[in-house]
Image (cartoon, rainbow, N blue to C red):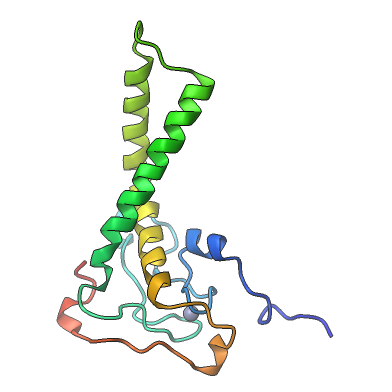
Length: 153
Ligand SMILES: [Zn+2]
């Protein structure tokens, strides 16, 4: 018997990077795929288009993503610091350190749209785990709903 695409468990990291629903790892969390369309960067589906998992669990649910976003930004700084150190190096006698600061700052700003999306996906993953029975309806229900405050965060 061969496995169908339904039986294959999508990779956790790849589905996080692609901002897939954390329950089925197949449906897109965001309405527009391109994060650099800035007017729609954070516009999310109300429920996962594939499995029906609610994506906004309560008012202000995604407020906690600032901690994830901060951690990811620090991680990028650390990675670029060590890459710069290994490839270009640092010195007190020239401006290589300041070039790293400038390029790192530009990189952090340029990566903001995908980082914000990944932060939301990581945050949702804390509360909604992958379910191998995602098509059989063990949905994690919303904690609280307030339509007026949806997508305000
Ligand atoms: Zn889903």
